[in-house]
Every structure is written in structure tokens, then in C-alpha cells.
Length: 131
Image 1: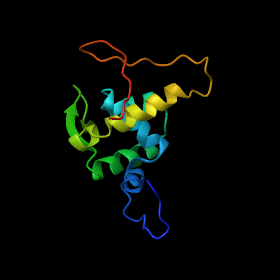
Image 2 (image 1 turned 30 degrees about the horizontal axis):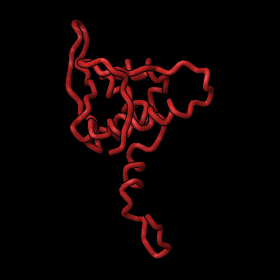
Image 3 (image 1 turned 90 degrees about the horizontal axis):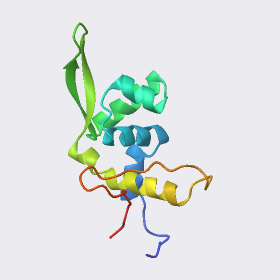
Image 4 (image 1 turned 180 degrees about the horizontal axis):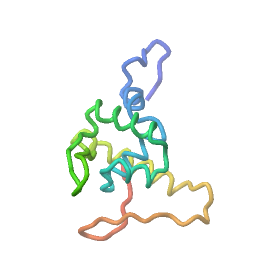
């Protein structure tokens, strides 16, 4: 692919995607949501970010149609909302898998232990592949 000086990048799909999901905290929220995390306090505990940043990112992902909210109520508590991936959000799984694969292939410290993700039904380790 040749990049031309006279081609506008204003409508670049990669740029548009990064505008929505291109920061560390958003990607970590999507990683956790893809692994079944749904509740605000669980996102905070897993990722370790401030309440304000998490609220901002969840609001942004919901407005973009990547997450949706669903009400739930614990006994004796007020109704709260959990966050679920939409089909648009699940469409980001290959992006997350590719980022994970790159991090596995090029770790900052080759001696670090790598988290192995396995398929629930058939068992082999997950690997990203571009076809």
C-alpha cells in the first residue's frame, strides 16, 4: 500500500476507531468486559482506575454503542446498572486479541509469565491470526 501526500486522512477508519477506543483505560475496560466483567465496582477493582475516569469511559463507550446498560438490584440495595458488550463491542474482540498477541510476542521482559487464554469449549490456547 502506497501512502500518497495528496490523500486526506480525515476519513481514515483506523483514526475513527482510535478516536473511540484509543486510550489505555478504554482498552482495559473492553478487555475486562470481553472477559465477563459487568459491574462498575468490578471494573474499578480489576483495572485500578479512579471513579471519575471509569465513569467517563463507560459513558463514552455507552454513547458510542459499544456497551449497553442493564439494570440489576442486589437485595436491600438500590437499582444499579451493569455494562454489557453490544454486537458492535463484541466486534472489537479481534482488535483486543491482536493487541494481546503482540504483547505476548514482544514482552518488555521475556522472563515474565504470560497469561494463557484458552477456548472454553475445545481447550487450545487463543492466538490471533490475520487471514
